[in-house]
Image (cartoon, rainbow, N blue to C red; front, side):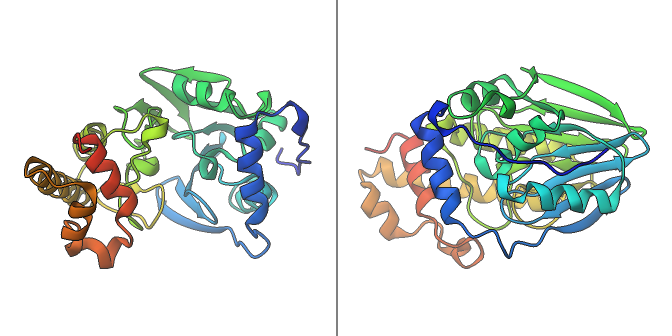
Length: 288
C-alpha cells in the first residue's frame, strides 16, 4: 500500500553534479506547490505541480506512473495519487533524465517501486544519483506493460530533447505522454549537453504525429493536454525556424545577426524567450 517516506541523503558519496542540482533545488521554494489532478481519458490522469506533468494510469491493478517531479514533492504526489486510487504504485516510467521529471526517483525507489527507463537514462542518472534513484528495468527499443486492462507501450525515439527520450502510449485510453519532446509552454529545449538534437526532435515529433490518431490525447512534458494537430503545429514551427536559420547561416550571418533577425518573432508571444532554442538550432546547423 502507499505509504509516506523519509528522504535521506548521504551527500559525501554524491558527485559534484548532483550536489549542484541539490543546491539549486534547495533554493526553490516548494512549500506552496499544489499537486492538482486532471482526468484525461479512460484510465488516464495527470498531475500538475512543479516540474514535468506526471502521467497516471489507475485501475484495479494499481498505478502506472510516468515521471515524478522533484524530491520535496514526493509525499504530496503520493497523497494525491492515493486520492485517485488506493492500490500500489506498480511502476514509474522516466521519459528522460532531467531532474524535474526524475527528482522523486530516490524516494520512490526506497519505497520499493520499480523504475523503468531507457538504458541512456540509467547511464546518465548513475553519474549523479544514488543507487535507489536508478531505473531497475531498462530497454533500448520498446517495452509493453499490461495493467489496468490496457497495453502501456513505452518506446524510444531518436535523440531529441535528450538522448534518452521515450513516449508512453496508453493504448486503451488512447493517451500518449510525450515527455519534454513536446511542450506547450515554451520553445523546444534541445539539450545538446545531454545528447539532444534538432533532427531527432523533428523526427520524434513526426513519430508522435504518426502514432496519434484524430482523437488521441497528448500529455506534454509541460503544459495542457493537446491533440495531434497541436503536435503538428509545434513540429512545423521548428522546421520553419530551422529553415530560416539555415538560410541565414548560408549568408554568413553569425549568431548575433541571426538573433537580431528574430526568426521566431511570429511565435515569441506564445512561447516566450527563444534564446535557448535559437542558439541550439544555430549550433546544430553548423553555425560558428
